[in-house]
Image 1 (tube, rainbow, N blue to C red):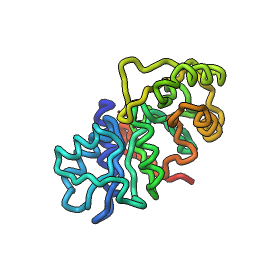
Image 2: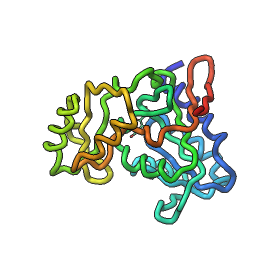
Image 3: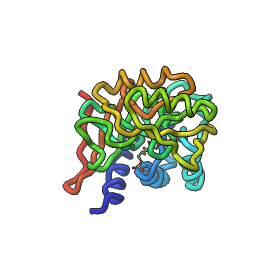
Image 4: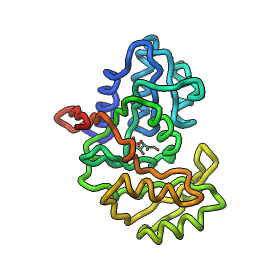
Length: 220
Ligand SMILES: O=C(CO)[C@H](O)[C@H](O)COP(=O)(O)O
């Protein structure tokens, strides 16, 4: 099976978590694109979707799935999204697609985070994938210096602007022994909007696709 076929298998397994009549939180990325396509087939059963990016919104719209503004919603039952890495405690690195801030906001108002991944995303320790940090443009040099002081090697994501009009620094070489602590520490740097560690609010359910099938794991 190709990696994309595995992503699709994980994504379609997540349709089981879509509740009748619900508004569903939708993440961003190539795995989520398969989920959105699957959602299109059952759109009559849902009220709509809160999207985490302009890209996901465009795909949802094209399939005729009603978009709901998060400003109109207090809580979502389920949020479905992918990850760049996930560890045994269900902490994640996200933001490879640059949508980390909106993803974190939608995840924060969701009761259940269902993470959909192919097996290559599961790691013992987070940090091989460079950690994305969204920064206010005028603060980029300052934030880069502070991240270097924390032991990372930040690199500006060239030619990329987030949906919020900001920049991304991809931080290489960070030793992420305590993801929740590092998440909080980086978010304290003036000029950081947020970083791609999802540890304070990690996943609740992991749907991990391997050639043998999709394994369902629940945070213990
Ligand atoms: O965090 C993300 C986007 O900001 C994605 O969930 C993450 O990058 C995984 O992407 P893909 O499903 O394409 O492998």
